[in-house]
Structure formats: C-alpha cells, structure tokens
Image 1 (cartoon, protein in one colour):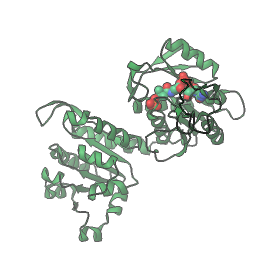
Image 2: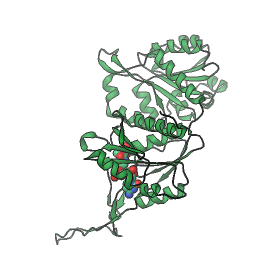
Image 3: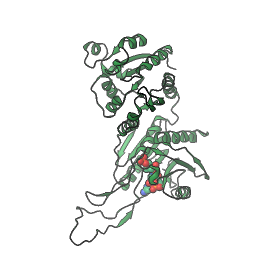
Length: 409
Ligand code: PMT
C-alpha cells in the first residue's frame, strides 16, 4: 500500500520529535519515499543528520536557501508529495497553519500545498485544551486537514492528560488508512449532494437582524464528509465564521428566502441534507431606515411572516425530489415525538433528532447527540453516541453510503 508513495514529513518542535525517527524507519521499511522539513524548533530535538540518514534523503530547513531552491523549490516540495504529515504538530505550528502564515519553510510548504495534510499534534494538556488551540484545530479540520491523536497519558512535562504524540504504530496506521481509503472507489462518486448549513439572518432594519446560535460546524462537516466520499457537493451556507471548505461549490446566503433560491438553483441532486438553522419567521416588512427610539416610550410594531420551508420543499413529491432527503430536528423537549412529527410533515426520508437545550451545547458547540429516525421505520430510532460534529458527519455519510449500496453500515 505504501510502496512508492511520496510523503512530505514536517517535524516541528517538541520533545516527542524523537518518536518520529521510528515512524520514518518503519515507513521506509514499507517502501515509502520521504522528504523531511525540519523546523527550527524541530531541530532542537532531532538532528538533521539523523533525519537524513533515516529518510535517505536530504533534509530541508531553510526557506531562503539558494541550494535548496535550486534543487527543489518549496512549491515543488509541497506538491510532489502524495500526503503531507506533520508530526509532531506543535501548538505553535498548528496556530500558524490555521492563520495561513508562511514565515518559515514548513508553513510556506503547508500554505502552498494542494495535497492532503495529516497532523499528529503533541503538546501539554493545558495547551491542547486551550480555547485557542481548539479553535485552530476546528479551523484546520473544517478545511479538510486530517488528524491523528493526540493520545492521552503521562506527558513529558510531568502532567497527565491529552497531548501525547500518538504512538508510531498508530501514526503509521493512519497513513496506511489514508492510502487505503484513497485507493478504494469513492462510494458516492457520481452523486450530487446539497447541504444547507449555518443560521439565517432576517433583517429588522438595515442594521438589525434576527439570528440564532448556529455556527455551521455541523453542516460544513457533513459537506466535507460527503465530498470526501466522492459526492459532488454544493454547500449553501448562511452567515458563519468558518472558512469555505475546499473541493465543493459554496454559495453564501443571508436569509431563508435566499437560501431557498440557492437550493432550488442547485437541483437536481441525489442527496439533500438540511443542517441549517433556518429562521421560521422573518419581519414582514423590514424597515428601509434604521428604526429610531423616540421619547414616546412606544415599542416598534414588528409583525412576522412565515419563511418558506426549504426542507419541506425538497421533501415534496415531484421530478426534482432528491432520492434521499435528510433533515434535522432541533428540539428542546419531547425530542423523539417532535422529530417523528417533523419527519412526516416535511416529507423527509431521514431525520436527525438532536437535543438543543442550552445544557447540550449543540448549537454553536463542538458535539452533537443524534437519534436517526427513518421514514420507513419511524419507531425504530437509531441512537448514536454523543460525539464531535466531524464524527457525526462521518457516521451520517457511512449511513448514506450504505443506503445507496443497499447494505447495512
Ligand atoms: O451549526 P451548528 O452550530 O454546528 O449547530 C448544528 C445545528 C444544531 C444547527 C444542527 O445540528 C441542526 O439541528 N440543524 C437544524 C436546526 C433547525 O432549525 O431545526 P428545526 O427543527 O427548526 O428545523 C427542522 C428542519 O427543517 C431542519 O433540517 C431545518 O434545516 C429545516 N428547515 C427549517 C425551517 C425552514 N424554514 N426551512 C428548513 O429547511
């Protein structure tokens, strides 16, 4: 599986860098060709000589080296690989990747590459749990960067928790899995998918709007997972802070009515997944000028109108109905009963019921707890474990693949 494959290995600073020497040795044993970039931090922990000896290749360290550029420019270095592995990926390198910096050879190659990237983070547990690192990881994953670890256990700093570099055997398994999955036929190749994601903003006046707490994390993760399975994806996103995922068409909308138009424009499709938190109502006639507070103490008279229901329109019978229409039911009470009613009312094939009470943290958070209810056996809800939104997306796409293959996942 690995023989003849090209790996660009980026080694950043961290005590765990020594484990990477073992990774190199075992990947070379399997016939992989490895070029290594050693960051300044990485070179504090392993020597260029040991990396060169094990990779049987020269080691690249300097962005501005004339010899390196003449032999192999940093663009070629990043493009000739089949996979880019960053191990260990320090908190600093992860932050620089997330913000798109290119201030050394490693980050320049990572910014210039159009190849898949797998990171193996390693750092102190508090650094790993820090909100900044969580946000950086979420950003990278939303761009399709893959991750192995970190593992949990004793850390070199004397503390205990998540932050250990994954064991060499696990990193090698992740690299092997990547090539195995890539060579397997893309199970959704030839299928078109529409995914709605994020909130809608419904204007009150030119400066105010009605919105909700949806971040788009769940919908975007589903779009990424569908694209990874080979589907041709159109992601229709409300206003979110996430970057556009690569490998798909992305349409940006603000309001429910704009989302409806974008969805209709994107038909026909085989699969539709409505993960967006679409406002049910809009202000019937939003003001052309900013509403002014005057001395009368009178409140503005806001009247509401119902927004079009995008999921119900997709689920309605007709020549353009996608073969598989999937909705979410975001509920704060009577989860399953309300979800079953929504499944029928909106004509969808599957509904993913999720508890969105404030305590669940689902809206805007990183996790989701799903009950999958199918139209052909509505009493038989399939309870998924509470998992992060990428895992939910992968789980859903596995079910979609099985549905089209006529097998059980
Ligand atoms: O974006 P995140 O922060 O990651 O959070 C994810 C999520 C909680 C938003 C997502 O998991 C989710 O539950 N999305 C649906 C939210 C919602 O609006 O649910 P609902 O029960 O109000 O609507 C039911 C279904 O109808 C949904 O599929 C919704 O997309 C769809 N709908 C609703 C109203 C409308 N006018 N048009 C629609 O298509």
